[in-house]
Image 1 (cartoon, rainbow, N blue to C red):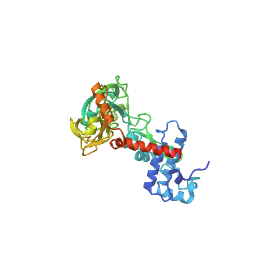
Image 2: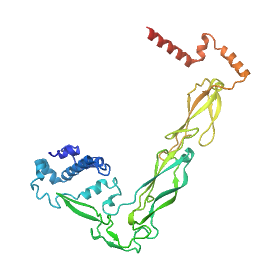
Image 3: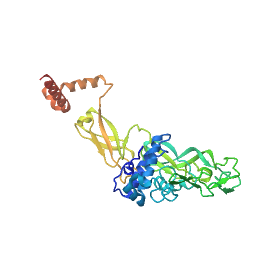
Image 4: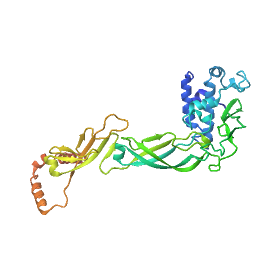
Amino acid sequence: MSKRDYYEVLGVARDASDEDLKKAYRRCAMKYHPDRNPGDHAAEASFKECKEAYEVLSDASKRRMYDQHGHAAFEHGMGGGGGGAGAYADMGDIFGDIFGNIFGGGAGGARGPRRGADIGYVMELSLEEAVGGIEKKIEIPTLDECDTCKGTGSADGKLENCGTCHGRGQVRFQRGIFSMQQTCPHCGGRGKIITNPCGDCHGQGRVERTKTLQVKIPAGVDNGDRIRLAGEGEAGPAGAPPGDLYVEIRVRPHEIFERDGDDLHCDVPIRISQAALGDIVRVPTLDGEVELRIPSETQTGKQFRLRDRGVKSVRSRAPGDLYCRVVVETPVNLTAEQRELLEQFELTFSGDGARKHSPRSSTFIDGVKGFWDRMTS
C-alpha cells in the first residue's frame, strides 16, 4: 500500500509555515493519540502516520528533499544516512513540547516519575451559598503520602541508581529509522530504585486515606464552575509530585429564584384587582424585600426589571438584574358574597362595549375568526 502525501496527512498546504505544521500535528495527535483511543488500532496507525509526516516536514533539510523526491528521498539509503540515530529529531522532545499539558503531567512527564492523578469532587450548594461564598469542610478518599517513609517508599530512606537507565529516568532505543526515548520501565522514570521497601506502603510511597480539607468557595460561583486546589489530588508514586483536586459546583434548584448567568428571575403572583387597579407589592431579593410598583391594567406575563438585584459573579464587575414576571392569580375558595360581587362585575362586560376592556381576548377572537374565514374560503 502506497504512503499518503505527508502534506495531505497533516491537512496543510505545501507552503505551510513551521507554526502551521505544528498546529496541524497537534490537532492530528490529539485526535488519534493512543491515550485517547485505547485499543483502537486504526487510530494508532493514524497517529504514527501523523508523527512520521511531522518528523519529516518539521525539519527544513528533510522537507526540501521530500518536496523534490517525495517518499523516495528516504528509501534505499537516500538522504545521507537517514537511518542513523541522529537523522531524526528525538520524538520524546517533540511529544514533550506538544503533549506536555495534555496527556499527563507537564514537561517533566517524560523525564521523571509520573505525578499523582487529579481527582474530582462534586460540591452541592444552595443559591445563597453560591452567590455569597462559603467555606466548607469536605472529606476526600484518596492516595495520600505515607507518613512512615515520607513518600519515598523506602524503609530506610536509601535509594540506588537504576541499573537500566543509570539514573537518567529514560531509556533510548532504535526503532527502524527512528531514535526514540521513553520513561524507564524499571524505575518508572525516577532514576532510582528501592532496595528496602517500606512495610506500610509496600514501596509505593502512598497509602489509602480519607483526607479532610477546608475549601473556600468564592462569592458568585455558578453551576458547573470548577475550583482547582493545586497539589491536593493523589500523591505521586514513590515521592512523585501530587495531582490536583478539582471541586465542581452543583447549585440546587431554588424555591423562588432561577439564575441565568448574572441575572435572577422570579414569578410574582398578584390578584385580579391589583392587576386592574395597580398597587405596590413587596418582592423578595437576595438582600431582602423591596417594593415593586404594579401599574394599572397590568397583564399576566408582564416583566419588570430591578437593576443590580441579581448576582455578582466571579467573572463580572457589577451585579446582574432581577426580573420579576407578574402572574395574575385567579381567586379560589370564594365566599357567597365574593361570588355575587364577581357575577355583578361580570354583567358590566356584556354587549359590544366589553371588547374594549379585554384587548387580548379581542385580538384572540379576531384571529380565530380570520382563521376560519381562510379555512372556509
